Amino acid sequence: MTYEMIGKELIELLGLKGSPVAVKLVSTPSDVPAGYEKMTKKERHCQFVQDTRLKGVTGYATRGEHLCKGGAAVMGIEPSPDLVADGTTYQKLGNFKTIEGAVETVHAIPKVDKPYYASVYAPLEKAEFEPDVVVFIVTPRQALRLSQAYLHTSGGRISSDYSGIQSLCADAVVAVRERGVPNMTLGCNGSRKYSGIAEDEVILGFPPKELGAMVEALKAFKQKWG
Amino acid sequence: MVKTVKALGIRSPNAGILAGNVLRSLEMPGEEVRFIVSPGAEAGMDAVARKYGYSMELNRLEKDLEIRMIPSGKTMEEIDVTGETCPGPVIIVGERLSGLAIGERLKVKSASLDTLADLTAAVTASGSRIVGEETEGDRHVITVEKCEKKETPVGTLSAANRDRVLVVQSNGTGNAERAYATFIFSKVAVSMGKKVTIFLLMDGVSIARKGSAAGVKHPAFAPLDQLMDEMMKAGVTMYACELSATFRGITENDLAPGVKLAGAATYIQLLSDPTYAVVNF
Image (cartoon, rainbow over all chains, first blue to last red; front, side, top):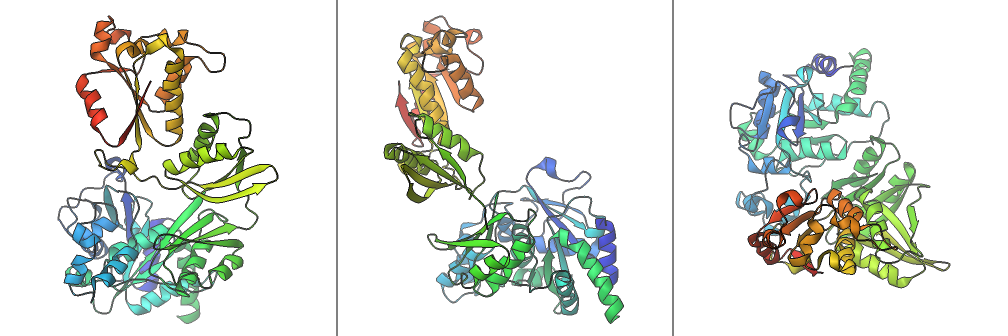
């Protein structure tokens, strides 16, 4: 099943608002998929995801296009600013009572361990590259179905981890990419404020290789549950 | 191959659920996995390992924990360097380590404790670590784990992090032992993961003259030109002092392939860089 078919099926079966978003990190300019242009606006990673999801925007963002330095840093696109890396920023923003709590959290945030040139975005059904991760911004009910679909073949449970900061970047992309398993996250103050994620929406990232079986599971659910 | 998965800040039982999902979703089923987790994640991990056919090993890192999930029945690569003389063991082990992925392990055996002590120094200097020491019959054994080498930025004022070696050669082909030592020590340094630069000056530039190294031979070693070529291919940078070359009528066209002419400023800059350890021959 191609990503075009998978993307279309997921939109149809789940009744998604917009598209699942294919995201890939590339190491060099020559790794950018052919025909993909640099994003025309400077935005945050979560905004690029939302523009791709809702407006069908495709393209890539280098350090110059990423406005959220923390998000770009966990994806290896630029070094982490000192005040972000040492927890000061998040303590000052009011997330943590103590600097120790901020440091503990920043230490645990998923990060890639090598530098990347850019992040690439496309609606899954139009992606002309092999994504690292597919990001879904969905309602809790759609998240339920995606979780059930993931577990349909082999069963088990899903573990999700997040800290309320660096959500669509660290939790939905880096954690999924590095571990090879799904993750769910609730957004962060930045992504809720700037990228228009609705009050009734949550975010999930899935390894692309799981999606074919998940489509089949969703079809089975539809037959069984309507 | 060993896959490394960082999952910090997640406690048991969620860490176990995550680990189980990682193990059953591996691109290469049966791959060894290193989980880097926070204290509090380890409870129940042994049951996860057993469920998916792995054995578990727990190691405490500075702040975090390393939980290694090793496929049951997987045997570690082994090498016996008994009988090899210096610098053979360091070169052999260095070459084997270079073929391993981060986190993979190699068991090294030798009848000589001194050889293993030398190897331990070389391995730790290259950024890897010794994770086990034991005895098997008449063999002493160390287990080496390949670790990520921390890059030292140029100009860093930390003697402890010197990961570059400058080999200065000023005797040339007229002193075969020193000429051989130049390249044999370079080879050892390369096998330890060091970046090596050779600077030929004074009579040392005679080595740089095209074809002259071929005339330096010793029955116990490969001809000098072969060692020189091997080092070039290994990425060693070789400079010939422009002044010394000019004094001896050596021009750029006379230089062996890959050797570059360099001025005094390059030499002084290399000597002044604290990330370089300097060896003179």
